[in-house]
Length: 135
Figure 1 (cartoon, rainbow, N blue to C red):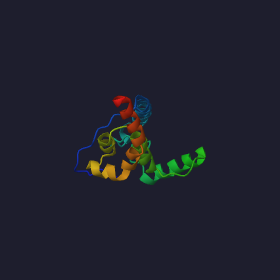
Figure 2: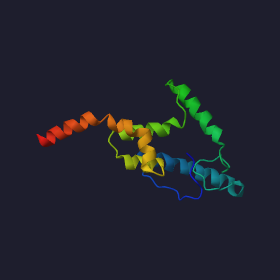
Figure 3: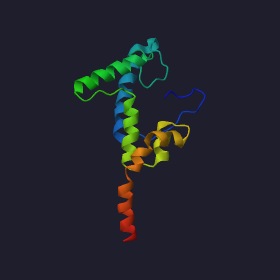
Figure 4: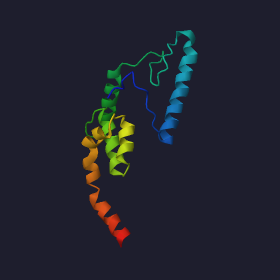
């Protein structure tokens, strides 16, 4: 889903390990910027070509497809990582409104329509918890 350019960007918390990977990436990017000087096209991008210009979107798709093939795992699309992220969070009990916010859905109903079945599968766990409470 592309962000509407008129809407404000959303902020989500990233795991510390990912933040560290992104910091190392930024250091490499800073080196490229310094090496090219005025020839660097600084557009403030997180992922850019070595000269700072935007990476064509299909490059990400092709690179991801190559990595999936090399890993010898079942084929998935790059966008499927978004669904996997949401499904894993839901399966591990992250509240629906938090998952919805992370995905940037405009309404929690959109998230519920797509992922509520995962929450329903936790019904047996809820019954066991209630049994312990009611004891």
